[in-house]
Image (cartoon, rainbow, N blue to C red; front, side, top):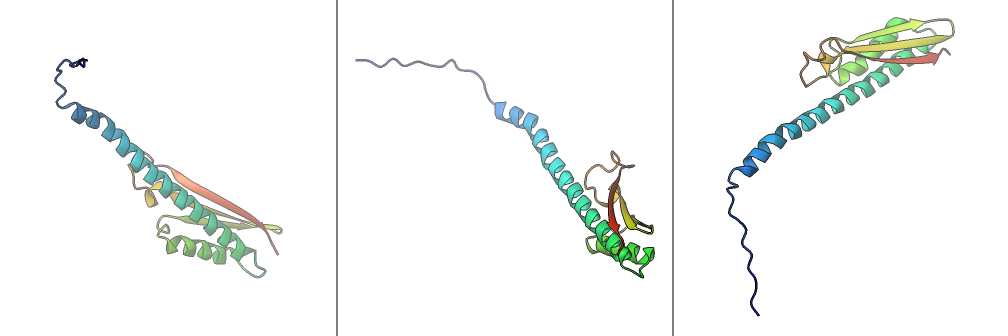
Length: 130
């Protein structure tokens, strides 16, 4: 019994992989650098939350002041390099202490900063005084 051999028509597919790569590669780069940018944002937000907590905790101790809380918050931010440009605002009332940390996106963004030029990340922490 004879085998039937089917022949495919010859088509010129030279360069098809190059064209497909040229179409997909920018999307892959966009996703890769976007994930790095989002990881940097989450890292900064987590650090800001902890710095706000430390600032509020130090200011909530009896006999402490807002300056001590601000110094503690800035110390936490300086440990990881987020201190330049950061603001730590501590407010005290008779019953509670609120700490707010603000950092401009230019301090933690690796991406196109001009797009997020006026973006400021903010984290707050409110604790009851002792």
